[in-house]
Length: 400
Image (tube, rainbow, N blue to C red; front, side):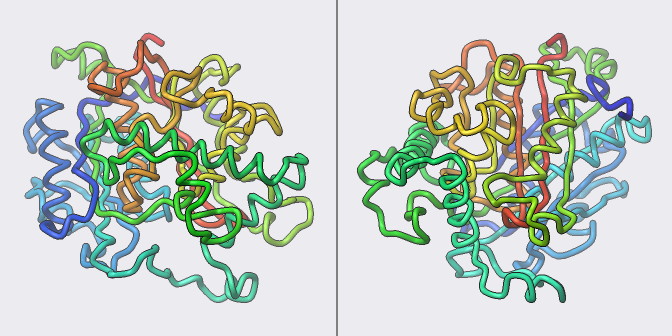
């Protein structure tokens, strides 16, 4: 395996806009909101930035392509800006670019910023992206809720899970995330919900009801990264470093070969194994303090617990119902409310997840602060179970 980037890059500052129906703001205002918080947190001037990575996936909403939307909105000092898009992992992809630039020595200080303005589409779900020429032949009638409902069916069949037990477990996933999001002033949805509300909500694609699906939202998030040595020289303490950042992309096996049974995410397992190896983590169930995972649907979060090797194979239902992932559990998940309460402005979600881990590791998460976390994991998944992009990032205290 390559030597990796463990502890070569420190997070100098982060920022995150309020997520929600931001009718008052365009993508430029959202970018500025996240950027100013990150710059103040880092304590640097714009002239100290060497390069920037900019993630936005749905360009039809008015953000624009190329690097100029970021450079113009932030008045960056004519530095290199690289726009990236990689489905729902776009924010993590921007962070990966900035982190790799610093780790390689190509930049001393780099910015990653992601934004998406989805509410302006007037559409309740994600806008339909061009699927290319091959995919319409493979899945002509696919929809996001339908695809992930099939994941639930395959998981239940493989592990012999009772239909009502699985429904109650994924309901607990949503109840837990809403309880956490209610404590977060930057979340889109801040209302607690009961298990009965989730269980009895209108069905979208069986077994996924209304509360099993995350919504769309507007938002932006940003990170400024440098080396641990520069961070220390700037007087920073409680330094948070990147332990690993891995990406895995489907190659067609899942949708075109019977070796995949539809009950798990092939890419997530590959990205997780590589990330743990890069970070030097041998027992993730014991070593990971907290997680933010891609809960586009509640069943996605439940299955991901096994794909990340936190829950044993077939054991996620029991862990969820035992409260293992609750805010007072062994490995709290979606402590900021997750996609369920933040919605999913695609370009920003990965950076929003890292923002929560960063705050928690520095003891600055306010009412939702966890006791002494050491290692945080973020997981992004873009696409469908049968064809997707998955990222796994691990960040932690420099001495962890």
